[in-house]
Image 1 (cartoon, rainbow, N blue to C red):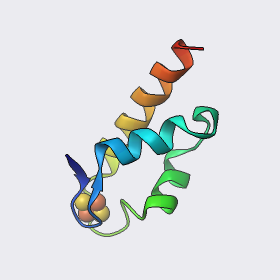
Image 2 (tube, rainbow, N blue to C red):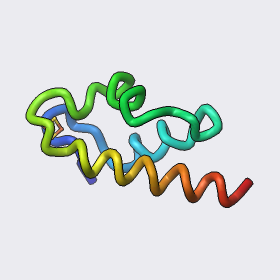
Image 3 (tube, rainbow, N blue to C red):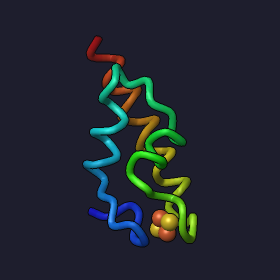
Length: 62
Ligand code: FES
């Protein structure tokens, strides 16, 4: 499913970026890497939430 329509970035791309690098990437870094959130900006709050969820899940797994 697309999170960022403008840049065609999907939920799974965000989740993968969020959990790589020991889950230490910031939302901003992820936006820079994928190019999302840089046009209309409507996706930004969804991206932030996805990143937080993905990183809290991955830290629970140790
Ligand atoms: S939907 Fe992501 S910048 Fe527009």
